[in-house]
Length: 108
Image (tube, rainbow, N blue to C red; front, top):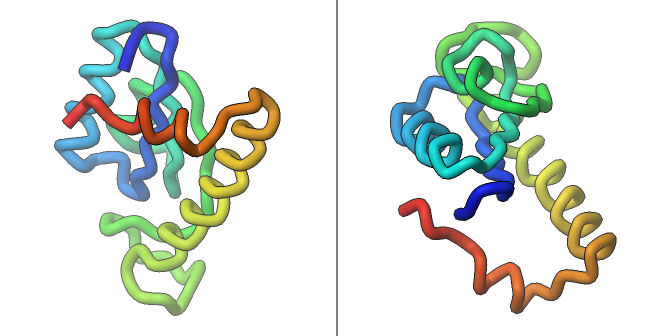
């Protein structure tokens, strides 16, 4: 991760401590943060530069949006939305899968 990069965080609750640490690291480097979540009332949302609200429920909510247990609907939404975003981004900027692999992660 470098300054001017974008870190995408998918967290239904927005309160996962390890993800909050990733956000803090990214912000300290100068990167932007885009949160994919089920709600706007969380720690990561307050720190994020961008947000997208996806269907699902978090471990802190008990809504009737789905009969699926726990975070299943959110995880499916992230998978589909994420794949569509990445494929469109790769196409728009002519990025190969090989290039993606080289820059996959350095926050761990």
